[in-house]
Image (cartoon, rainbow, N blue to C red; front, top):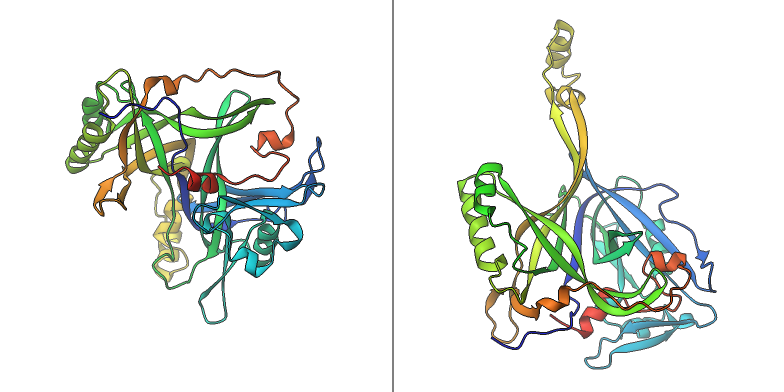
Amino acid sequence: MAELEKELKRGQARFEVFGELRVNEDSWGEVRQSASSTYKYRRAALSVDLGEGRSTFVELMGGYDPNRPILRRLSKTQGEGLMDIPWANRLNENIVANVSPQSLIAVGKLDENGNIARKVFVSELDAIEEMEKTFKNGDSVHIWGDVEYHRYNGQIQRRLSIRGISQIVPDSSSAGRHEATLRQSFLFSKNSISPDYEDELEEKGKTTITVHVPQYVGKEEGAEVRKVLPFPQTLVYKANNEDEIKRAKFVIEKFMTVEDDDLVREVVLVVDMYDGVETSTGDFELTDDLKDLLDLGVVTEDELKRTSTVSGKRIRENIVLKPYVYKDPRTQQITVMSKDRYDISVLDTSVKEEEPEEASIADMFGESDVDTPSESELDELDLF
């Protein structure tokens, strides 16, 4: 085995959402100025309806400092790293053409021919302005972007930061899709898997897995950190029949079970970000009037069932769907993105803190007062 790394690095953290947009005039936010600096920013917060009581929230936030009007974005040219873009030149097509796709925000709109016309922006302010003009409540949308984790008031929060949003062609394969998935690097240790996971799968139809995710933290609660930290997360692996139980046992044993006390394995998984309510449909009696309405087609049986459905407690779960499979560019082989990578010391969450400063609004959303590259841009500089 190669020598284990003792410094945690960024991993993959991407999301993809399909559903119906739920927005109003407040969803797009307005340009604000940081209370602690001259940094100006805007935050759009959008809800996406996934059907069956499920929904998810995505957002886009960013801006610039008029006293230092420079945007830093990743160059498309290999090896050039970050490029400085003067604020006044941010819409220059020649400059935008030299920016890496990972640094662009895409906005797609249906044209008169039923095709998607896509615009790209380097500034969140311009992208939000275009989104507000393009999308309306109820639009079927496809949204993708970066997943970022923050610790605020002692709680781990997950933010879905938009890198692209598009209307959906009505008769395409994406029409009618309702899903919210995450492609994420997870860190597994010897204690991640329950010793009774096989019994739990067979008796309860699921098992709970404790993991960590790597997240770069610049500043936390006013203190400088500037390192990648492990944030705890919980996964649920579900299996509803014998075939699913068999597959779950194989995946857990093959890719998630760590025997060595000193080892941390990094595995990229595709996960269903479930956020919904527990529902139950009660019995209802078909009266003569209801039978007549059904016979005349005034109401449907599905409508009656929905009326008798009772909502219960809210459920938020990260449900494992499958390991992420990719083509290795070195070997050209299809493989699972899994690696025995780190020493167990990387899961030590203690951080040497400097004298804390007063936390600003920008700190709470993980933003600095100087425009910085996004997670996807930084990932480009530090691949898995």
